[in-house]
Image (tube, rainbow over all chains, first blue to last red; front, top):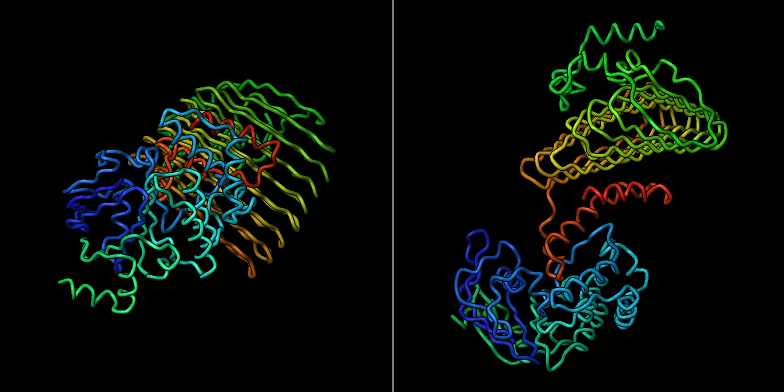
Amino acid sequence: MLEIKNLHAAVDGKEILKGLSLTVNAGEVHAIMGPNGSGKSTLSYVLAGRAGYEITGGSIAYKGEDINALPPEARAAKGVFLAMQYPVEIPGVTTLTFLKTALNAQRRARGEKDLDAMTVLKLVRGKAAELRVSEDMLKRALNVGFSGGEKKRLEILQMSLFEPSLAILDETDSGLDIDALRLVAEGVNALRSPDRAMLVITHYQRLLEYIVPDRIHVLSGGRIIKEGGKELALELEAKGYEQIIKDAA
Amino acid sequence: MTALRAKAAEDFRARGVPHRRVEAWKYSDLKSVIDADQVVSAGAVQWTIEAEGVEMIGAGDGGSAGAMGEASVAFATAGFGLRVAKAGKAKVAFATPGQARVRIVLEPGATLDYIEIAEGDGFQNIGMDVSVGKGAVFTHVRIARKGSGVRIEDVNANVAEDGIYHLHAAHFGGELSRLELKIALNGKNASAHLSGVGVLDAMHADVTTHVIHAKGGTQSTQLFKYVAAGKARAVYQGKITVAEGADGSDSRQTAKALLLDERAEADLKPELEIFADDVKCAHGAAVGDLEADSLFYLRARGIPEDEARGLLIRAFLHEAFDRVRDDLRDALWTAVEEAL
């Protein structure tokens, strides 16, 4: 599904990713863990195609296709989804209108017909109930006045609605209390599927108790320095990043 | 010619067309686009009016906010007046060059929805004198369509106790376009709530306000938002005066501009003049570009860049229509949609 080879990427001329390689197959959930400043968010932005995140070397293949030159909207239409660490607030655009606009934009880009408002509403309501996204949230302006938990739940609702092939979750656990975390994790687990790959980016091991990954990669200094199964999270928790980085050196 | 008109003509001739070295016209250099002869000999603007619940009266000859209001007092050769005793509605369209005087009188407790559309090219100058009686509510909607000429409206208003002046403006600019208001809140609990948007594509638009809290317990709010593209120039000057003894007055003003192009310019100037104690005055101004985070968020959800920009621009403007009555919002929003 995703094959990253020797990826180098720079922001404002400063190299952040320095030879990162990673392969995620369909049906797998991989976690990227790393200390602050290791390049975790940069990796998520590079994969989603954010302007200003420049690939200076290596390659990213998604379903065997080089997506480096594609704008973010084209990647979204092809099934790349990034659940953001800080979902933005947009006054004047209701959540439901935004969901319909985004869903139909993706469909149009794939040559599919627009869904009418009623169909979208039914689709959204079904998914909203599972994630305890209230009718009121759907009517309010996008993310405006939402709590941290509500914002993250809405991110997962979008993931469920857009049915991506590759889902990247950037620090989805940040700012969540334990109940909100559990609810979000349940939403994510429900979306695990043999056709879908997930990349869970996190600083803490806590999230991985709820979303159990197939593989864990430790990112430091823009490179993967250690890889392992789910037990690696516990080792990290026990030793701390500093020790793991020292061991790897 | 009455003495008032003669005096106004004399004053105008002495000062000439206002220009950028006159503080109130610093960002709108009228003299660079029009000369005194054009003002003196502009002739009568033509208008159409549909009205109900109003009595037609004379245009009168007094009251102006600034230099061009004074010019309309002196040289306008046409005009009309509306008096409302209970509930009135008027829809007015000014479609040609020329000048006019408009007088509006709301008797105590009356309401008037006054919806005006200014369009066409050339030099158009409307001077309004508005009297809002005790407990009366004046709702002033102004849609100034894009034009290649010079378009000015000058409003002098007096609001009595418990009276309300609502302004909702939508401006699309001209070679030079200006809405200038001087609103005096003369009685307890009188209020003025002014809001508007400007959507400018290589054009100029200026909103200049002066709200005078003459008595205590008066309130005013102002919210103006501009989107400026190309070589557009957006101007907002908002002056608030709180007179001596007008304690308990409350005023808020905000102006924001979104510059979509490096060549676009916004001049936002709030100004406070306070002679009373115990007043609340808040003001703010901000100029910026579309936020990169918001744009990326929408695009990462599959929304193409142009559409995402459009959504964010609408979201930015939206707040300025929050206080508009539902039945009036459509006309304003349709005009905005046409310009975007």
